[in-house]
Structure formats: C-alpha cells, structure tokens
Image (cartoon, rainbow, N blue to C red; front, side, top):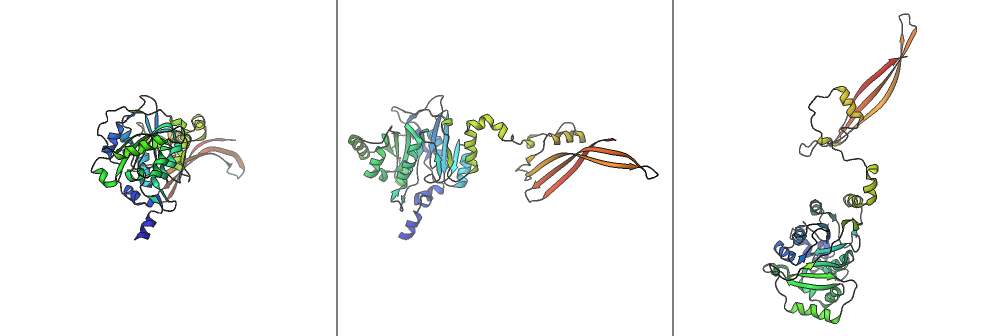
Length: 366
C-alpha cells in the first residue's frame, strides 16, 4: 500500500490533492468572495493576473470581480477543462505549469494560486513550494499574491524562510468551517519584494501570526491592498514548451509585427456561412462573377446541421482551336474559343470528394 502511494505522488499530476482537483474540487467561492474585499484595483488601467492551476477559472474571477479591466492568464493540466476555460479568459495553456510553460518575467501584478497539495518524492519537495518558486519570477516587484495552501505547509520553518525571503506578509487567515476541516486551508495575502532576503523580525512576525490565526472574515473593513496596473502587451511570451497551435495563435495575435503586416501575411476569415440567401435568384453570369471573386471557398456548413465540409472553387482561362471544312473537304476557317473553366471541389467529413464543372465561353473566328 505504501509503494502504491509513492507511485501516485511520483508527479504532481497524480498527487492525491490533484486527483481531488481533477474531480472538479475547486476553491470555495464563498471564501473567494471574502478575499476579494481585501484588494482595490485601478479604475481604468489594465490588470494582468496569473493563475497557475486555474481549473474552471471561477475562483480567480470571483476574487477579481471588482476589477474593471482584469485580464486573466491561466494554466491547467486537464486538457478538456483548459479548452473550456480558454473561452472565458484572456489565455489558458493546457500544460504542466512546473515543466511545460514559457512566460514573460516581471509581467503580472496579481496572482491567485491554489496549487496541488502533496510532495514530489523524487525531489523531496512539496508542490506548494515548487509552484511558488516557479511563478515568482513572472510577477512584478510589488505584485499582490493570494496563496491558498494547507496550514501545515506554512508551519514548516524551511517554507517560512523560503516564502518570507521573496514576499512581505500582509494577511493570513484560515478558511471558515466546515471548509477548514476538509483541507486545513489558509489564505496568505502577500506582496512580492524588490529583492530576496528577510530580517529576523519578519520571520518572527510570520511565526507569531500563526499562533492565533483567525477565520477569514466574511466582510473586511480594513485598509485595502492596492493592486498596480499591468499591460497585456508587456506579456510577449505566454506559451507551452511543447508546440501548441492555440497558444501559438495567442502569441501571434499579440505580436506588433502581425498587427502591422497581418493583412499581408494571412487570408481574411472565411465568412461564407454568413452570406444570406439572395433576394433575387442568381443567373449563370452572376455565379461566374462570384466564383472568380473567390466566394464560397473554405470551410462551409454548420455544426448544428452536421454538414461541415471544405470547398474550393477554381477558375482557369482556357483557349481551344477548331478547324472547319467545307462540303468538298477543303479546310476552311480556324475557330478559336476562349472560355473560363470553373470547377468546385467539395471534401466531406467522410472523405468523399465531389467535383463540379462548368464553363462560360467567349469565342470568335479567325
């Protein structure tokens, strides 16, 4: 039994705590609502926030509910969860945060993290410490951090020294019951220091705060912690180590070069499905004009109708010559015809390929 337990904790993706998170256990939103009351945000400027284990994104969205211009960047190991979360945040990477991401340093001014709980038995380190070490360089000096971890992790002096060397402690509270009894969670609110190091007084103050730790208040009435602004365009790198087309698309969209030359480097989005039925029926000449203009080319159909397919139209100018003969068999005139050959190729999901062809002639005699 002990050997199986060690195997389960061989990587953070299989740790006991992460198994519970994969089973859709996320940070209690009532606690997140209470945490939100500790911060004040810029009225107009942007705030870029990092969530290294974002899940469905509900927790950090709740904490940032009072921020008018919050842009959330998250990382999530569960692929399907990441894809769904990506729809409602600025960016969400499907990756292992500890080993699978590349992110611009000193870019974020707010971070919310409820990392997997457990120990990496190969490195003899707790995942909470590994997450803290990994995400710290991505935060600006003065950035605000909300770190949700078990109280017994913060009670370890080695973790206390590691933490206080990088962050100034602002508040620490334990989650209210019955939530606290489940995972012994505490919420640490701290500010990233401008450099590493700590004083004896800082360490003693942190240790003293644990002696009489209080429940997280439902409504905080004290002085708010001001969050600095941060701009999206300063985050030039937010991608997976392994190539991922969706995260690559995000990086490209943020590129100033693409914004300047994008219309020369890529085709416009196909909008054939948005073309409505014409009021006046089209004749052959009109179909010809549409074909040579490139209409009806690309992905067509809808998910609802289950008829999505690829189609491509092609128009080529073709010239042919025919020789006429009179009744005696003597060669007469040479007739030259020039026409446009129109072909439409359709590739269906089943793999079936269908081709249609037509031509519009323009001819004369020579």
